[in-house]
Every structure is written in C-alpha cells, then in structure tokens.
Image 1 (tube, rainbow, N blue to C red):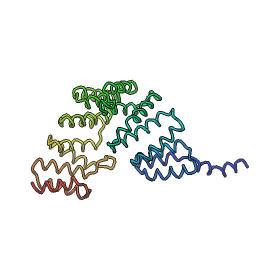
Image 2: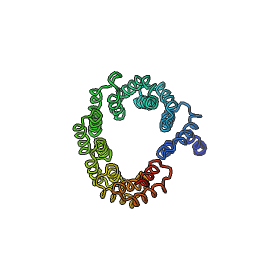
Image 3: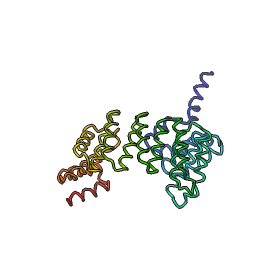
Image 4: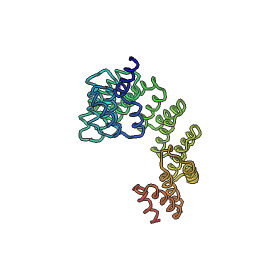
Length: 316
C-alpha cells in the first residue's frame, strides 16, 4: 500500500518541481522567450517560488525587457533583502535601462550605486558586483560620484579574491584613464598569472584601440600557441585586414580558419571571406576581392557592410 502511494504521488511531486535543467538548456540555446513561458507556467501554480522568480527576471533581462526584469528582482528583495545577488541583479538591470535612456539615466544612478554597494557589503566574495563597481565609478562623471580612487579600491578587493580579475580590473581602469603603460602592464600581468583567452583578448583589444596592430597580432599568436583555437586564426586575419598589416599572414590565417571551420568557432565563414576581400583590396587584386565578397554575400546576403564593400570593390 505504501509503495502504491509513493508511485501514485511521484508524478505530482515531479510536477511541482522547477525544471532547472530544462531552463538552463533553453538559456544556453538563447531560447529566452521559451524559457520565459516555461517559468510563467510554473509560477501560475507556485507564485512565491523565489528561484523561479529570479529565473524569470533573468529571462526578461536577456530579452532586454528591463521593466519586467526590474519588477521580478523587486519582488525578490521584498521577500529577502539580505541576498546579495538580488541587489546585484536589480542594480544591473537598472543600469541597462539607464544606458538605453540617457535622458532618464540620472534618476537611476543613486539606486544603481546603492544596489551594487549593498550587494558588495552583503557578500565580501562577490566578484561580479565588484567588477560592476569598478566600471561604474570609472564611467560616472565626478559630479555624479565618479571616482578613480574608489574604482581602484574595488579593483584591490577583486585582486584579493582573484588575482587575475584584479589585474584585469586595473588594466581596465588605466586604459579608461588614458594611462597606456600601466594598462599594458596589468593586462600582461593577467596573462602571466591566468593566461585565459579572456586575458589575451583584453590585451589584444587594448593594442587595437591604441593603434598597435602588430602587437595585437603577436598577442593573438601567443594565445593560439597556448590555446590552439581555430577562431584565433580569424582574429589574426581580421586585424591584418582592418589595419593593412602582415597581409600574407592574415590571408593564410583566414584560409586556415575556413578550412578547419566548425560551428563552435562562433564567427560565420562569411566574415572570413569578407576579410579576405579586404586583404585583396589592399593588394589591389580586384577580381580576387570580388570573388571573396561574393562568397560572403552568398552565405549572408543581408549583411549591410558586405553590400557596401562590394560597391567599393566595383569602384576600384
């Protein structure tokens, strides 16, 4: 009899559980609207389920439905004001809403700052919110509370939690403050300590933004030697094409990228063909440039830069 009751009740118990695995899969597949519907269906019968409310806020956030996301995180804070992540997410979506409406952004700054500071206070190990504070204090004008020294304070806290994050944060601060020597120093320190693709990417982007394409290519080559990712071949070709440097190397890397292409590389092959067209334009090879831009358009016919570049080639 007991076994029968367990069997009978098991489907009901399962029905009452939030399917986190399915929602996570939908998020990974960027199926945010579908995830939203699944969570709303669950909340119909479990309106006070905090994890479901949080995930619904996340689903709205991924879709840039800022007001709906704000509402969900507010609900969470009304129930539990001591959860750092709720404050962090609430401040985050307020910040994203502010970025989209500069006229109203001044009204959000106080709440954004207060939410991030409260999250940092509640959780001394919260890395993401310290990153948010580093960026916030650097980007805000002084009259609105911006402060390089405060940004550096949170960078120090980051360094105590994660040496790599601390170095990257300091690199960001000094790059933002137009101190390239110090920015380069800390980005290189991050590579020496961590060596992740993110570390290499930050230094590469820094060299590109400071018009040092040769150093950018060398950094990507170092990353390739360590991580052996096909997508890095595209990155070298992209820099070569954009800055008209090391064209032969760039062309070879793009051809290698196309030859070894897989969906995991992230960048469609069409963009590699576009970069090859750029390289051949630099070389004054009109027919080769036209061949590659047509290949790019065959794969992605609606991309405006491809169309514009084809017209430019025809005028050569």
